[in-house]
Length: 69
Image 1: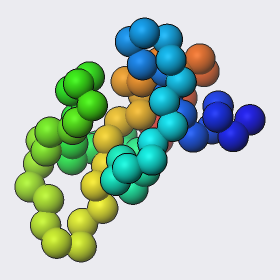
Image 2 (image 1 turned 60 degrees about the vertical axis):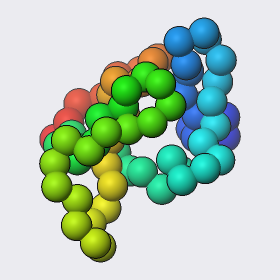
Image 3 (image 1 turned 135 degrees about the vertical axis):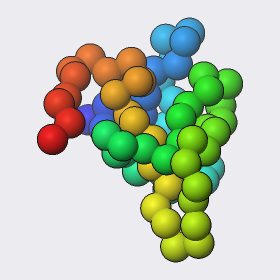
Image 4 (image 1 turned 45 degrees about the vertical axis):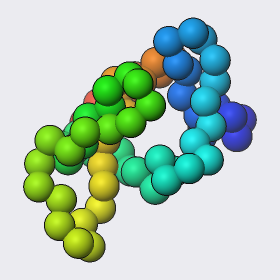
């Protein structure tokens, strides 16, 4: 259950558990970064000191989708 909750599936079908600074990126339906698919994110909005870094987890290979509210 822990792996399912804290990992994502990469393009090779491997479960990836974030161990680096990616573990501090939170989900948002209006993110300020976007995943490149190459192991790093690109800022798509200005991010200021104190801002939360966010990404849209919906782009990952989720077995169960979710709706942004």
